[in-house]
Length: 508
Image (tube, rainbow, N blue to C red):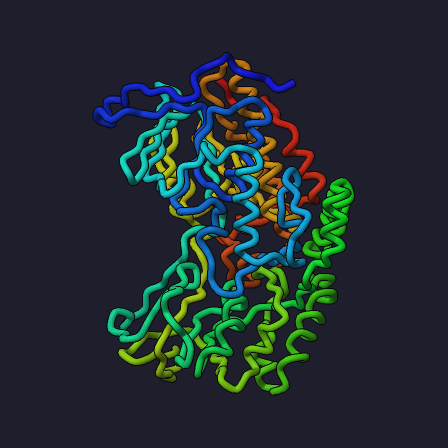
């Protein structure tokens, strides 16, 4: 039976604290930052437990998180659609085995409508400051538009792919052509017949480059460090399967669970570098050889690091695109730009009309880390100093009544962020109902609990091929530690997140 707190008005207006002038404050029980899969999951799971005095703030203009903000050509998930969905909100009619961006965005919008939480979402609302008020035992939150909120509990759900990381190079301001980042795609710019430079060869570039390649006159692909790209079993979903899933939702759930369980052997595979090389590298080499006929280009495109050191990528058309006559692959980094083109680190110059940066996102330290300020007034960024640590990816000592979804070491090897989000949301809902049901004012994870959790993780991380002595990757924090992976079986992670242990926390 859900624990319900005493009835209270859904929205309360109060005078703002002295430090915030005279504008009114909207007081809520739970404030959620982010309307992506994590934020939606948290709101829905809280609603299931009777906690409905919630508000979601998101700076985007649409629901969907990264799937609303990112819309570059060719964007789709690299996890099978059945796994890249919320278990409590199945979709029987995915169009493909790997769903495209617009379909995922529409799915998340539908989830918000299906569970009746759209009216709690404030879009176009950027959080500029969120600080813990120890005297009031509440979070005080300000937005760019001048709004102010006060919340008993704060759930930060910004997602781990947020702000596009737009680099700067000498001469960039003098370049007379067009420059943009794949995460901020310029849909108003026509690439047809142009000379285009693509900087980077990560998860974004391998999706948009094959789409724009047939359109452009010439394409220069700068790849300082090629990575492993495996074949992708992407196909249109048969209509008979969708019809069957509509009639038998239990069967679809069974298929999803079976797919998740089938990925459990991925963990021991990633814990043994020799096995990992033996199983995955032949697939990567096959993908190169079936498209690239030039032996020298094959050699240069073959990574020298073990698969998994960097994010494994999946594509059936990446190497086909690189082999086309209008594409030149350059294994150099960008040095600087001129008025009419780019210059690589070895001094080679290429005249281009457009430069597209596929250089990734601020994964290591998103902007939200500078916004959240804990009990001592320091931001999360200052608190961590580039070495993030949390308890089960969510609870941070020094930040009471706050949970950070998809935080450090919260990503399983064998699941998806959707899977992680829904189970973290279960944990948060249990924690919040405990706080409200017992009339607690302040809940803070114990420092020794965070330390013990991370020590246990570190012992397992040492066996994985994601280490500073092997490769450079955004998985690693400033100290060279893998801040990304939770190296446990999915069944163990799910079990841990289904049980909120009050003993792990200090309570007032």
